[in-house]
Length: 105
Image 1 (cartoon, helix red, strand yellow):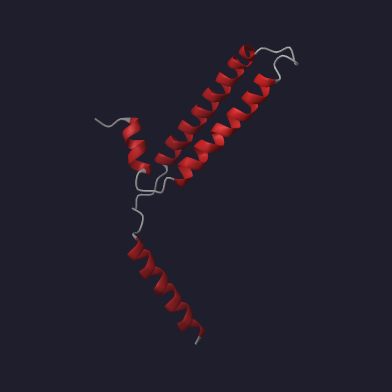
Image 2 (image 1 turned 30 degrees about the vertical axis):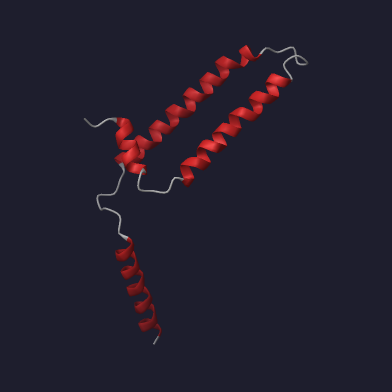
């Protein structure tokens, strides 16, 4: 059975995980730092952290929905040709460089 999560993992498993880590880390910091600041200043601001929960949930749902729509749009407009391997890219680049040198002569 083809599930969304398996396809998502298959799409990214051959790529490096650095981008995934950085995005996750930035999202964590983006949510943790304001959360800690609000929690520490809740007494002085006479705010309760519970008041921020609906807005935060709405923001997370909106960002998740936007990300899912981007992935689906990218999947629809995917190229019919598979990406080139490293060897094929190297050969194509060397041909381009050779053509440039011949044109200059």
